Image 1 (cartoon, rainbow, N blue to C red):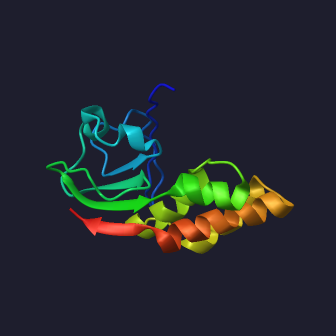
Image 2 (image 1 turned 120 degrees about the vertical axis):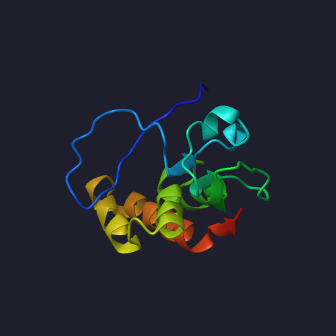
Amino acid sequence: GAPVTAFGRFDDKPIREKTQIYNPHVLVVLDSSQRASPRVFDGLAANGTMVLNHGGALDISHENLARAGIIDASAIAQEEIGIPLPNTCILGAFARVTGLVDLDPLVESLGDYFQGKKRRANALCVERGFSEVAIHTV
């Protein structure tokens, strides 16, 4: 129920900083009901990007938001794995929208967490997230 904030850092060098991220370059919003909350955009860096789990049209704006990837990840997860857990689909969308991660390593990494049918279903979620995300310039 309650909104949760989490952080991740990407770099090609070791990351030693272990603090909150105060000026994120990318926002990932799993719960579309939070998309218009002013708190979602707190500190968003200029020319920021958002990846949003949302089944509708792009209906958000913010002065620092330059690019948004919209995908109904919950619906895709429902179709592929039988429950509306958007996480792996959002990974695929994140990869395509940001270009920070390649698709193949994401799909390969699923073997660390899933086996058999669950692995294949989640791989389909990642692949569909990558291919079906709608990217908008805001």
